Image 1 (tube, rainbow, N blue to C red):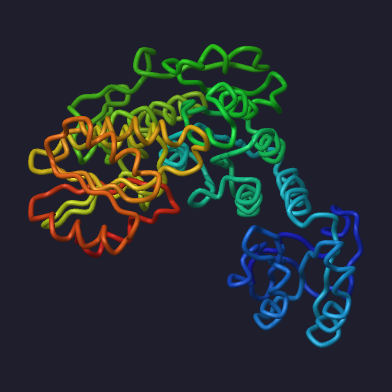
Image 2: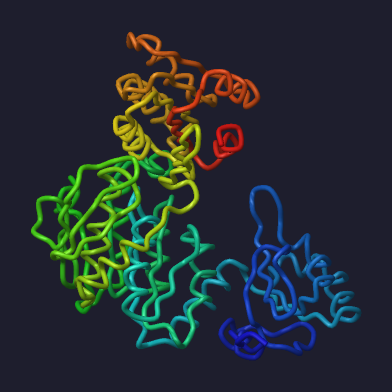
Length: 459
């Protein structure tokens, strides 16, 4: 039997509500996806743009799940279904004002059970996930460490990550993402980081927040729960570094290429990463590009502040492997640089720089950069100009927004082959016809574009 996260009585106590039905088991895990439910699950049905989790209560009953939160309003309109599931499936339901807010309350309570846990929070426009994985690899050499899986970093994902914390853990590393004003403040109130790292201030989610100034203000809220005992870790070379450091209640540490620190680059960059020394300890970092070296510096700055020995830092960096779609190099007759988990103008520009490390032909397949709002046309046109100067022999542009990039490429005097379409089948056929053995193919686009679909064609 798995560990018990909560008893039904404790959930009722924390949320201040009473169960409908008689709960007969404890909670071993919390799920928002009905397909992942089973015995021991507390189901949290969320209402989204496309569906409503309340529609799947019969499904979770069939999977053996006995406990679920429900929205008060939904409950008042669906008492018959609730009574049926209570009487026929031995389920119990806890009506709450908002299921998401209730899950967040449970996460706050769960964190309160671990007063000796050291918490690291990481945010930034780019590099959050990679920095989290590097730091997690380092700290796992040092102490029992838990990190949030993938990019479960939002007001929904972070509480789910919190429920993974166990008594054995000494350190928790949480990636914290946001795309609207006030969200970071909420996330900080849930995990209350002792060390808070900002990777950079860029243009990701500028369509939601309106400007880089607003993004910087929103990211700075990661420090909102500081009371003088915590440490802020800030990039010295970011144009917002002074703003980020201003008024922080706690210690401020700067990192970056111009700041004296333990990280030394001992080889040139290549598509396969770079060789480093950490206070004389050699290691190899497997992700390519200067932007990923910046992520190393952020992680190492945090590790040093936490008292980690240089030998353990080097060992952790050595063990770091690329995550799916994040600087992932897939070797074969055609080499694929799969960097398409997500994209914004800053990260796309950094990815295009990597093409110059390849000696043979390089090809860039670029998909729409989403969530840019009013800045979308301008930013796609700018990226088109950058792509035209990237050294790529061919540019394949995919998606409605990328039409602006294609126009910029066409009018730039770009000497290579360029192609644009909004139809995936046309993209696949064009790429298949063009690429040949020895090529490097960069895949870069937002998550919604799913350029990883091209991988089987290329490998």
